[in-house]
Structure formats: C-alpha cells, structure tokens
Amino acid sequence: MTHAAQWWKTEEQGVRCLLCPHLCYLQANETGICRTRQNSNNHLVTHAYNHVSALHIDPVEKKPLFHFLPGSQTLSIATNGCNLRCANCQNAILSQFAPSGLKPEEAISPAQIIEMAKKNSCQSISYTYTEPTVYYEWMLDIARLAKEAGLKNIMVSSGYINPQPLKELIPFLDAANIDLKSFDDDTYQNLSSARLHPVLKTLQLLLEAKVWLEITNLIIPGWTDNMDILKKMCVWLADNGFDNTPLHFSRFFPSHQLPGLPPTPVTVIETAAEIAASHNMNYVYMGNLPINYPEITTCHHCHKTLITRMGNRLITCRLTTNICPECQQFVPGVFN
Image (cartoon, rainbow, N blue to C red; front, side, top):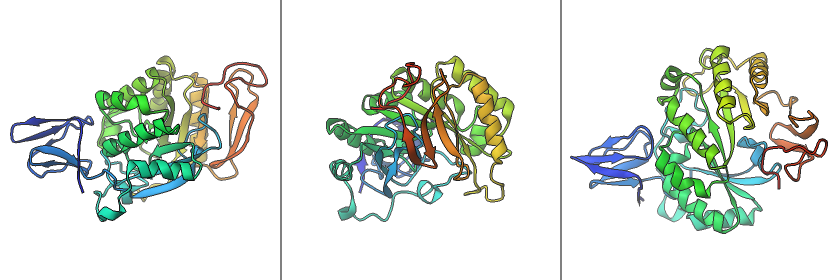
C-alpha cells in the first residue's frame, strides 16, 4: 500500500525528499528518517497514506488549544512514523515505527474520515499524536475535504517542515499547536535530532497567515529547564509578534529514552510561567500538573476570569465572541 509522494526531485542515482529540513537523499528502496517515504524505482512514495494507527475523539483542550472553539470535540488521527528522534517521546510506540500491519481493506480514506467527524459531532479534525508532516499527502487530502464540509483543521506538530510544503497546506489550516522544544540549537540536535531555525520559520509563517496558533514548551529536567534560555525564548516570541499567542509550559514525565529522569517539579513550571508573563507573554498556561490545578484564562486587560478548565475538561466559558464581557477589550482566539 503506497501512494505517490509530493515534494521531491530526482538526483543522480536517487531522489531527494524536499518535505522537511532533513532533505533525505534516498537511493533505490531506501526510506527516509521518517520511516514513511521511500525511493521506489526513482520515484518517491509514501507508506503513510490511509494508514491509521490512532483514531480518537478528544476535547480540543487536549491538543492543547485553549483559545480555539473551547469545549468542542475534535476527531484526532495519526499514522506511524516521525521525522524527529525525541529522546522524551511519549508516543514512541507509534512515532518510532514504520507504518505496517494494516490490511488494504482496513484503510481509511479521506472521505471516511470526514464522515466519522460529522457522525460524531466533531467540529474539527486534528492531525496529531505522531508528526503529521510525515503523512503530509493524507493530511492535505483530508484537510481539503474537511474545508468543503465546514469542518476545521488542526495540526499538532513539531513544526519541522519546509516552507513551501507548509505554504501549500496553510490555506486549509484553521489552528495549530507547535512544539517549540527549546530555544537552544544544540539542545534541539541532542534531544530531537532537529534544528531550531526551521521551527521558528514555521511559527512565523503560521502567524503571518493568521492560522490560530498556540505553542507548547515541554520542560525536561537537565535538558530544557535552563531559565536563562527560556527567558530568551519568551523575549524572542514577544518581540516577533507572538505576545498574544498562548504559551503552554508542559510538565515532563519519564518516557522512552529518559526513564531515569524525575518528573519536572511543579515549582519549575510555575517559575517558567512567571518569567513568560513578566516578559510580555499575555496568555501563559501550565500543563500536565496535578488534576486539582485549574487552568484559567484571564483577560490580559482587566484580569477577570473568562475560562476555567480542570485537566482537559472545560468547566466554564464566558466567551462567545472575542470581546471580554467585563472590559469590552479584544481577547485573541476563535470562540464562535
């Protein structure tokens, strides 16, 4: 089960994949770092198309998206594979294996995904769990049909994608959560086998295109808990127009290749949130905390409570438009 891939070119004795910054050069039958894209007779094909490894109905808050259709349900889909090698991966059973084991009669077409979303009263489809860049063709075809059907499209991604493929996808995207893993390039390479700059470029392109954007930063003890680097990240975000972009600091729990590390202390997450707020980030959240920690949205003008959540569950939401009911000022997001 293969499907023609996009974004590649022929080179001597092989093909060059142009989808992500790895720019894998593949000789006959070789597969890229993503484990999904292969040189077949000097043509690039994907093994990820229609290969569903995860399909669930989630609250949109789980993505996490806190300023996008609060309280709504989203149909979350994924296939195997990833173009990163994160030592902390929490979905390694999916991301670090090639698409395999799916029988042809079990494939799920883009049209069937749309029908599932509508049947289950989902307002959106989320490309998530693994890295959706590696199932780009499937995501793009679903997103086109979803747009026609009045459904929203959400990409939950590392942002490790080249600008031109992203620009082709952007007209069909309504929201994205991008995992900004660190603001240090060496950490990016050692932790995830990736680079920082392409992710920053993805953030800028999404912001310029007015795709609703939220950012997640996982704080890992000994890896990404340097508060000076975190401060630099917040300064860059605020200075480059992301001051109203919700920033989620997420607590690490031992996983994959980092089983011996302790969970991130709650106090470290709280300190990170304080630093971000003091450096002009207007909407800062703390994720993966104990269940009794509410996640509250307050208006950054009048500081009155607008939305209350417990875990991924919406408790109250006072917003039906972008206008704060208390001070009549604009609140960024998609609430209607």
